[in-house]
Image (cartoon, rainbow over all chains, first blue to last red; front, side, top):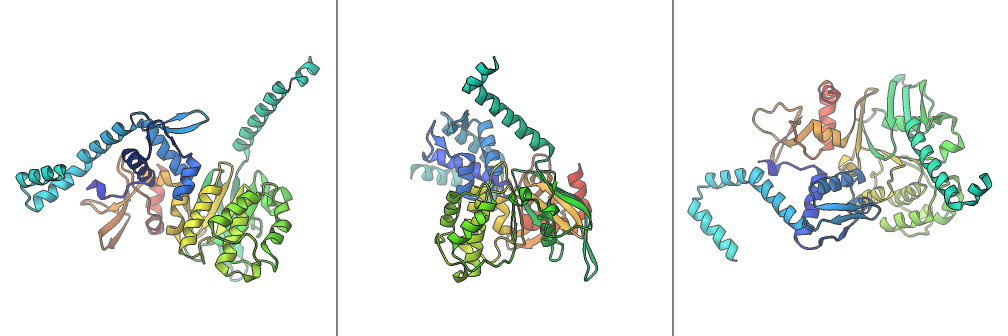
Amino acid sequence: MNFKDNKPIYLQIADRIGDEVLNGHLQADGKIPSVREMAAQIEVNANTVARTYEYLQQNGIIYTKRGLGYFVAPDANDTVVRMRRDQLMQNEMDYFLSQLKAAGVSPDELNKLYTEFLTQ
Amino acid sequence: MLINLAGNKKVLYLCSVLVKQYTKTLTQITNNMLQIKDLSFSYRKPNRELFRDFSLDLHPGNVYGLLGKNGAGKSTLIYLMTGLLTPAAGMVTLDGEDVRRRLPKTLSDMFLVPEEFELPNTTLSQYVSINAPFYPRFSNEDMSRYLDIFEMEHDVKLQSLSMGQKKKVFMSFALATNTQVLIMDEPTNGLDIPSKSQFRKIVAQGMSDEKMMLFSTHQVRDIEQVLDHVTIIDQSRVLLNASLTEVSTRLAFRPMREGDQPLLAQAGVMGTFVVVPASEGEETQVDLEMLFNATLQQPQLVAQLFEQ
Protein backbone atom coordinates (compact mmCIF):
# COMPACT_ATOMS: atom_id res chain seq x y z
CA MET A 1 0.00 0.00 0.00
CA ASN A 2 2.64 2.42 -1.08
CA PHE A 3 0.30 5.25 -1.94
CA LYS A 4 -0.72 5.58 1.67
CA ASP A 5 2.87 6.28 2.63
CA ASN A 6 3.67 9.92 2.88
CA LYS A 7 5.62 11.16 -0.08
CA PRO A 8 8.53 13.56 0.44
CA ILE A 9 7.45 17.17 0.15
CA TYR A 10 9.32 17.75 -3.09
CA LEU A 11 7.21 15.07 -4.78
CA GLN A 12 4.00 16.43 -3.26
CA ILE A 13 4.82 19.78 -4.85
CA ALA A 14 5.54 17.99 -8.14
CA ASP A 15 2.09 16.37 -7.92
CA ARG A 16 0.54 19.74 -7.36
CA ILE A 17 2.22 21.21 -10.43
CA GLY A 18 1.15 18.09 -12.36
CA ASP A 19 -2.46 18.79 -11.32
CA GLU A 20 -2.14 22.36 -12.62
CA VAL A 21 -0.93 21.01 -15.96
CA LEU A 22 -3.81 18.53 -16.19
CA ASN A 23 -6.52 21.04 -15.29
CA GLY A 24 -5.14 23.54 -17.79
CA HIS A 25 -4.02 26.23 -15.32
CA LEU A 26 -0.50 25.70 -16.60
CA GLN A 27 -0.33 25.81 -20.40
CA ALA A 28 2.39 24.47 -22.69
CA ASP A 29 5.33 26.92 -22.87
CA GLY A 30 3.77 28.96 -20.05
CA LYS A 31 6.13 30.36 -17.43
CA ILE A 32 6.01 28.91 -13.93
CA PRO A 33 7.04 30.85 -10.80
CA SER A 34 10.74 31.02 -9.90
CA VAL A 35 12.03 28.74 -7.17
CA ARG A 36 11.94 31.57 -4.60
CA GLU A 37 8.48 32.77 -5.61
CA MET A 38 7.09 29.26 -5.38
CA ALA A 39 8.85 28.66 -2.05
CA ALA A 40 7.32 31.81 -0.54
CA GLN A 41 3.91 31.02 -2.00
CA ILE A 42 3.68 27.55 -0.50
CA GLU A 43 5.86 28.32 2.58
CA VAL A 44 8.53 25.72 2.03
CA ASN A 45 12.29 25.77 1.83
CA ALA A 46 13.68 26.96 -1.51
CA ASN A 47 16.01 23.95 -1.76
CA THR A 48 12.94 21.70 -1.64
CA VAL A 49 11.35 23.57 -4.55
CA ALA A 50 14.67 23.47 -6.42
CA ARG A 51 14.58 19.70 -6.03
CA THR A 52 11.00 19.58 -7.34
CA TYR A 53 11.98 21.58 -10.42
CA GLU A 54 14.98 19.36 -11.02
CA TYR A 55 12.73 16.31 -10.84
CA LEU A 56 10.14 17.85 -13.19
CA GLN A 57 12.90 18.83 -15.58
CA GLN A 58 14.39 15.33 -15.60
CA ASN A 59 10.97 13.96 -16.41
CA GLY A 60 10.42 16.42 -19.25
CA ILE A 61 7.52 18.28 -17.63
CA ILE A 62 9.28 21.64 -17.44
CA TYR A 63 12.31 23.15 -19.16
CA THR A 64 14.58 26.13 -18.48
CA LYS A 65 15.56 29.02 -20.65
CA ARG A 66 18.83 30.39 -19.38
CA GLY A 67 18.20 33.59 -17.47
CA LEU A 68 14.47 33.54 -18.13
CA GLY A 69 13.25 30.86 -15.78
CA TYR A 70 11.18 27.71 -15.98
CA PHE A 71 8.51 26.89 -18.56
CA VAL A 72 5.97 24.12 -19.08
CA ALA A 73 7.12 21.60 -21.70
CA PRO A 74 4.99 21.42 -24.87
CA ASP A 75 4.03 17.78 -24.21
CA ALA A 76 3.81 18.13 -20.41
CA ASN A 77 0.18 17.03 -20.35
CA ASP A 78 0.90 13.68 -22.01
CA THR A 79 3.92 13.14 -19.80
CA VAL A 80 1.96 13.75 -16.60
CA VAL A 81 -0.81 11.40 -17.74
CA ARG A 82 1.75 8.70 -18.59
CA MET A 83 3.55 9.08 -15.25
CA ARG A 84 0.31 8.95 -13.29
CA ARG A 85 -0.73 5.84 -15.17
CA ASP A 86 2.60 4.16 -14.41
CA GLN A 87 2.29 5.04 -10.75
CA LEU A 88 -1.29 3.81 -10.56
CA MET A 89 -0.45 0.51 -12.20
CA GLN A 90 2.75 -0.09 -10.26
CA ASN A 91 1.81 1.09 -6.81
CA GLU A 92 -1.84 1.65 -6.24
CA MET A 93 -3.63 -0.98 -8.31
CA ASP A 94 -2.49 -3.89 -6.12
CA TYR A 95 -3.97 -2.32 -3.05
CA PHE A 96 -7.16 -1.36 -4.85
CA LEU A 97 -7.62 -4.88 -6.23
CA SER A 98 -6.96 -6.50 -2.89
CA GLN A 99 -9.58 -4.28 -1.30
CA LEU A 100 -12.07 -5.28 -4.01
CA LYS A 101 -11.29 -8.93 -3.42
CA ALA A 102 -11.63 -8.58 0.35
CA ALA A 103 -14.99 -6.90 -0.11
CA GLY A 104 -16.13 -9.66 -2.52
CA VAL A 105 -16.63 -7.42 -5.56
CA SER A 106 -16.86 -9.59 -8.68
CA PRO A 107 -15.16 -8.66 -11.99
CA ASP A 108 -18.62 -8.20 -13.56
CA GLU A 109 -19.68 -5.81 -10.84
CA LEU A 110 -16.47 -3.83 -11.21
CA ASN A 111 -16.89 -3.74 -14.98
CA LYS A 112 -20.45 -2.45 -14.61
CA LEU A 113 -19.42 0.22 -12.09
CA TYR A 114 -16.54 1.45 -14.22
CA THR A 115 -18.61 1.48 -17.41
CA GLU A 116 -21.31 3.49 -15.67
CA PHE A 117 -18.72 5.87 -14.26
CA LEU A 118 -17.28 6.52 -17.71
CA THR A 119 -20.67 7.35 -19.21
CA GLN A 120 -21.55 9.82 -16.46
CA MET B 1 47.97 50.56 -24.04
CA LEU B 2 47.06 50.86 -20.39
CA ILE B 3 45.29 54.14 -21.02
CA ASN B 4 43.52 52.62 -23.96
CA LEU B 5 42.35 49.70 -21.91
CA ALA B 6 41.24 51.89 -19.02
CA GLY B 7 39.32 54.01 -21.46
CA ASN B 8 37.38 51.01 -22.55
CA LYS B 9 34.60 50.91 -19.99
CA LYS B 10 33.27 47.60 -21.19
CA VAL B 11 36.59 45.82 -20.67
CA LEU B 12 37.01 47.40 -17.27
CA TYR B 13 33.54 46.37 -16.24
CA LEU B 14 34.12 42.82 -17.44
CA CYS B 15 37.37 42.65 -15.46
CA SER B 16 35.70 43.89 -12.30
CA VAL B 17 32.89 41.36 -12.69
CA LEU B 18 35.38 38.55 -13.14
CA VAL B 19 37.41 39.66 -10.14
CA LYS B 20 34.28 39.94 -8.02
CA GLN B 21 33.10 36.49 -9.05
CA TYR B 22 36.50 35.04 -8.40
CA THR B 23 36.84 36.59 -4.95
CA LYS B 24 33.28 35.55 -4.16
CA THR B 25 33.94 31.88 -4.90
CA LEU B 26 37.25 32.15 -3.09
CA THR B 27 35.72 33.46 0.13
CA GLN B 28 32.94 30.91 -0.12
CA ILE B 29 35.48 28.12 -0.23
CA THR B 30 37.81 29.44 2.44
CA ASN B 31 35.86 30.96 5.28
CA ASN B 32 32.35 31.99 4.38
CA MET B 33 30.63 30.20 7.20
CA LEU B 34 29.89 30.12 10.88
CA GLN B 35 32.22 27.66 12.49
CA ILE B 36 32.01 26.28 16.01
CA LYS B 37 35.26 24.59 16.85
CA ASP B 38 36.08 22.41 19.88
CA LEU B 39 33.84 24.47 22.07
CA SER B 40 33.61 23.86 25.82
CA PHE B 41 31.36 25.72 28.15
CA SER B 42 29.89 25.34 31.64
CA TYR B 43 27.84 27.58 33.84
CA ARG B 44 29.50 28.21 37.18
CA LYS B 45 26.35 27.68 39.24
CA PRO B 46 25.29 24.94 39.27
CA ASN B 47 28.56 23.51 38.08
CA ARG B 48 27.32 21.74 34.99
CA GLU B 49 29.20 21.18 31.78
CA LEU B 50 27.00 21.91 28.78
CA PHE B 51 29.49 21.55 25.93
CA ARG B 52 32.81 19.78 25.58
CA ASP B 53 34.80 19.73 22.34
CA PHE B 54 31.64 20.67 20.52
CA SER B 55 32.02 21.37 16.79
CA LEU B 56 29.54 22.39 14.14
CA ASP B 57 29.73 24.27 10.84
CA LEU B 58 26.93 26.34 9.33
CA HIS B 59 27.04 27.12 5.62
CA PRO B 60 25.28 29.82 3.59
CA GLY B 61 22.12 28.88 1.74
CA ASN B 62 20.75 26.72 4.53
CA VAL B 63 17.99 27.00 7.10
CA TYR B 64 18.99 25.00 10.17
CA GLY B 65 16.66 23.62 12.80
CA LEU B 66 18.35 23.25 16.19
CA LEU B 67 16.53 20.67 18.27
CA GLY B 68 17.21 19.45 21.78
CA LYS B 69 15.41 18.65 25.01
CA ASN B 70 14.81 21.29 27.64
CA GLY B 71 18.14 22.12 29.22
CA ALA B 72 20.16 20.58 26.37
CA GLY B 73 21.83 23.95 25.87
CA LYS B 74 20.14 25.30 22.74
CA SER B 75 19.89 28.87 24.01
CA THR B 76 23.38 28.73 25.50
CA LEU B 77 24.74 27.54 22.15
CA ILE B 78 22.97 30.43 20.44
CA TYR B 79 24.52 32.94 22.86
CA LEU B 80 27.93 31.38 22.24
CA MET B 81 27.39 31.57 18.49
CA THR B 82 26.58 35.26 18.68
CA GLY B 83 29.45 36.17 21.00
CA LEU B 84 27.26 36.93 24.01
CA LEU B 85 28.90 34.24 26.12
CA THR B 86 32.59 33.34 26.32
CA PRO B 87 33.54 29.69 25.86
CA ALA B 88 35.94 28.07 28.34
CA ALA B 89 37.78 26.60 25.37
CA GLY B 90 37.39 26.59 21.62
CA MET B 91 36.06 29.32 19.40
CA VAL B 92 33.18 30.41 17.21
CA THR B 93 34.15 32.23 14.02
CA LEU B 94 32.17 34.00 11.34
CA ASP B 95 34.08 34.37 8.08
CA GLY B 96 37.23 33.57 10.04
CA GLU B 97 36.75 36.23 12.77
CA ASP B 98 36.24 35.21 16.40
CA VAL B 99 32.67 36.30 17.20
CA ARG B 100 33.70 36.91 20.82
CA ARG B 101 35.75 39.93 19.68
CA ARG B 102 32.43 41.50 18.71
CA LEU B 103 33.99 43.37 15.79
CA PRO B 104 31.65 45.79 13.99
CA LYS B 105 32.20 43.71 10.87
CA THR B 106 30.82 40.64 12.69
CA LEU B 107 28.04 42.37 14.60
CA SER B 108 26.70 44.03 11.47
CA ASP B 109 26.47 40.66 9.78
CA MET B 110 24.53 38.67 12.39
CA PHE B 111 21.18 39.15 14.04
CA LEU B 112 19.68 37.37 17.02
CA VAL B 113 16.01 37.23 17.96
CA PRO B 114 15.99 35.82 21.50
CA GLU B 115 13.00 33.97 22.90
CA GLU B 116 12.15 36.88 25.16
CA PHE B 117 13.13 40.49 24.67
CA GLU B 118 12.14 44.04 25.47
CA LEU B 119 11.68 46.80 22.94
CA PRO B 120 12.32 50.46 23.84
CA ASN B 121 9.57 52.97 24.47
CA THR B 122 9.60 54.48 20.98
CA THR B 123 7.68 54.26 17.75
CA LEU B 124 8.62 51.65 15.20
CA SER B 125 9.93 54.23 12.74
CA GLN B 126 12.15 55.76 15.45
CA TYR B 127 13.39 52.30 16.30
CA VAL B 128 14.24 51.64 12.66
CA SER B 129 15.99 54.97 12.15
CA ILE B 130 18.15 54.38 15.23
CA ASN B 131 19.01 50.72 14.62
CA ALA B 132 18.99 50.21 10.86
CA PRO B 133 22.27 52.15 10.26
CA PHE B 134 24.18 49.37 12.06
CA TYR B 135 23.20 46.98 9.27
CA PRO B 136 24.58 48.00 5.86
CA ARG B 137 22.18 45.78 3.91
CA PHE B 138 19.04 46.83 5.79
CA SER B 139 16.12 47.31 3.40
CA ASN B 140 13.07 49.44 4.19
CA GLU B 141 11.29 47.82 1.30
CA ASP B 142 11.81 44.34 2.77
CA MET B 143 10.71 45.60 6.19
CA SER B 144 7.39 46.91 4.78
CA ARG B 145 6.83 43.68 2.91
CA TYR B 146 7.34 41.54 6.03
CA LEU B 147 5.10 43.82 8.13
CA ASP B 148 2.43 43.48 5.45
CA ILE B 149 2.68 39.70 5.49
CA PHE B 150 2.33 39.78 9.29
CA GLU B 151 -0.62 42.18 8.87
CA MET B 152 1.06 44.72 11.13
CA GLU B 153 0.71 48.50 10.96
CA HIS B 154 3.84 50.21 9.69
CA ASP B 155 4.06 52.78 12.41
CA VAL B 156 3.14 51.79 15.90
CA LYS B 157 4.16 52.59 19.46
CA LEU B 158 6.26 49.59 20.47
CA GLN B 159 5.09 49.66 24.10
CA SER B 160 1.45 49.39 23.08
CA LEU B 161 2.00 46.04 21.35
CA SER B 162 1.22 42.60 22.75
CA MET B 163 4.12 40.14 23.08
CA GLY B 164 3.11 38.35 19.87
CA GLN B 165 2.92 41.65 17.97
CA LYS B 166 6.30 42.73 19.34
CA LYS B 167 7.71 39.49 18.10
CA LYS B 168 6.30 40.04 14.60
CA VAL B 169 7.72 43.57 14.43
CA PHE B 170 11.12 42.48 15.73
CA MET B 171 11.29 39.48 13.37
CA SER B 172 10.38 41.73 10.42
CA PHE B 173 13.23 44.05 11.39
CA ALA B 174 15.59 41.09 11.89
CA LEU B 175 14.91 39.70 8.41
CA ALA B 176 15.09 43.15 6.82
CA THR B 177 18.63 43.68 8.15
CA ASN B 178 19.69 41.08 5.56
CA THR B 179 22.58 39.92 7.72
CA GLN B 180 24.43 36.83 6.63
CA VAL B 181 23.50 35.06 9.87
CA LEU B 182 20.02 35.17 11.36
CA ILE B 183 19.36 33.23 14.53
CA MET B 184 15.99 32.94 16.24
CA ASP B 185 15.33 31.22 19.56
CA GLU B 186 11.87 29.62 19.58
CA PRO B 187 10.57 31.94 16.83
CA THR B 188 6.99 30.67 16.79
CA ASN B 189 6.47 30.80 20.57
CA GLY B 190 3.75 33.31 21.35
CA LEU B 191 2.58 33.59 17.74
CA ASP B 192 -1.10 32.94 17.01
CA ILE B 193 -2.18 30.34 14.46
CA PRO B 194 -2.27 32.58 11.33
CA SER B 195 1.09 34.16 12.20
CA LYS B 196 2.81 30.78 12.13
CA SER B 197 2.00 30.44 8.45
CA GLN B 198 3.00 34.09 7.91
CA PHE B 199 6.29 33.34 9.64
CA ARG B 200 7.03 30.50 7.20
CA LYS B 201 6.20 32.83 4.34
CA ILE B 202 8.62 35.57 5.39
CA VAL B 203 11.36 33.03 6.02
CA ALA B 204 10.89 31.46 2.58
CA GLN B 205 10.85 34.94 1.05
CA GLY B 206 13.73 36.40 3.07
CA MET B 207 16.09 33.47 2.54
CA SER B 208 18.86 33.66 -0.07
CA ASP B 209 21.93 31.70 -1.11
CA GLU B 210 24.18 34.05 0.87
CA LYS B 211 22.29 33.77 4.15
CA MET B 212 22.23 31.16 6.86
CA MET B 213 19.37 30.96 9.29
CA LEU B 214 19.12 28.92 12.45
CA PHE B 215 15.98 28.39 14.49
CA SER B 216 15.89 26.57 17.78
CA THR B 217 12.50 25.14 18.54
CA HIS B 218 10.30 22.66 20.32
CA GLN B 219 7.43 23.43 17.97
CA VAL B 220 8.86 21.47 15.06
CA ARG B 221 5.53 21.23 13.24
CA ASP B 222 5.48 25.01 12.93
CA ILE B 223 8.66 25.24 10.95
CA GLU B 224 9.65 21.84 9.59
CA GLN B 225 8.80 22.62 5.97
CA VAL B 226 11.04 25.70 5.85
CA LEU B 227 14.09 23.86 7.21
CA ASP B 228 16.59 22.12 5.01
CA HIS B 229 18.95 20.99 7.69
CA VAL B 230 18.45 19.53 11.13
CA THR B 231 20.85 19.56 14.07
CA ILE B 232 19.95 17.57 17.18
CA ILE B 233 21.99 18.12 20.33
CA ASP B 234 21.95 16.30 23.65
CA GLN B 235 24.31 16.06 26.61
CA SER B 236 26.93 18.31 25.05
CA ARG B 237 27.07 16.30 21.84
CA VAL B 238 25.77 16.66 18.30
CA LEU B 239 23.64 13.54 17.85
CA LEU B 240 22.61 14.31 14.31
CA ASN B 241 23.59 16.99 11.84
CA ALA B 242 22.24 16.31 8.38
CA SER B 243 20.30 17.82 5.52
CA LEU B 244 16.67 16.74 5.35
CA THR B 245 17.35 15.27 1.92
CA GLU B 246 19.96 13.03 3.50
CA VAL B 247 17.59 12.11 6.34
CA SER B 248 14.91 11.12 3.84
CA THR B 249 17.27 8.79 2.01
CA ARG B 250 18.60 7.11 5.17
CA LEU B 251 15.39 6.81 7.19
CA ALA B 252 11.81 6.11 6.20
CA PHE B 253 8.78 7.42 8.08
CA ARG B 254 5.74 5.32 7.30
CA PRO B 255 3.09 2.86 8.52
CA MET B 256 4.53 -0.33 9.99
CA ARG B 257 4.93 -3.35 7.74
CA GLU B 258 5.52 -6.97 8.61
CA GLY B 259 9.15 -7.73 9.34
CA ASP B 260 9.99 -4.12 10.17
CA GLN B 261 12.59 -3.53 12.87
CA PRO B 262 11.77 0.05 13.68
CA LEU B 263 14.02 2.51 15.47
CA LEU B 264 10.85 4.05 16.79
CA ALA B 265 7.23 2.94 16.68
CA GLN B 266 4.33 5.13 17.54
CA ALA B 267 0.77 3.82 17.80
CA GLY B 268 -1.99 6.09 16.56
CA VAL B 269 -5.57 6.10 15.33
CA MET B 270 -4.45 5.18 11.81
CA GLY B 271 -2.25 2.29 12.97
CA THR B 272 1.37 2.11 13.97
CA PHE B 273 3.75 4.58 12.39
CA VAL B 274 7.46 3.76 12.39
CA VAL B 275 10.90 5.14 11.73
CA VAL B 276 12.99 2.49 9.94
CA PRO B 277 16.19 2.50 7.91
CA ALA B 278 15.12 3.40 4.37
CA SER B 279 15.36 0.64 1.80
CA GLU B 280 17.01 1.27 -1.57
CA GLY B 281 15.17 4.02 -3.43
CA GLU B 282 12.57 4.45 -0.71
CA GLU B 283 11.90 8.08 0.12
CA THR B 284 9.26 9.44 2.46
CA GLN B 285 8.41 12.73 4.06
CA VAL B 286 10.54 13.35 7.13
CA ASP B 287 8.61 13.64 10.38
CA LEU B 288 10.88 15.80 12.55
CA GLU B 289 9.17 14.93 15.79
CA MET B 290 9.67 11.22 15.17
CA LEU B 291 13.21 11.83 13.93
CA PHE B 292 13.98 13.68 17.17
CA ASN B 293 12.55 10.92 19.37
CA ALA B 294 14.26 8.17 17.38
CA THR B 295 17.61 9.99 17.58
CA LEU B 296 17.38 10.48 21.34
CA GLN B 297 16.32 6.90 21.97
CA GLN B 298 18.75 5.21 19.56
CA PRO B 299 21.68 7.60 19.21
CA GLN B 300 24.21 4.90 18.26
CA LEU B 301 21.99 3.30 15.64
CA VAL B 302 21.17 6.65 14.09
CA ALA B 303 24.84 7.67 14.11
CA GLN B 304 25.77 4.41 12.37
CA LEU B 305 23.13 4.88 9.69
CA PHE B 306 24.43 8.36 8.90
CA GLU B 307 28.10 7.36 8.92
CA GLN B 308 27.76 5.03 5.94
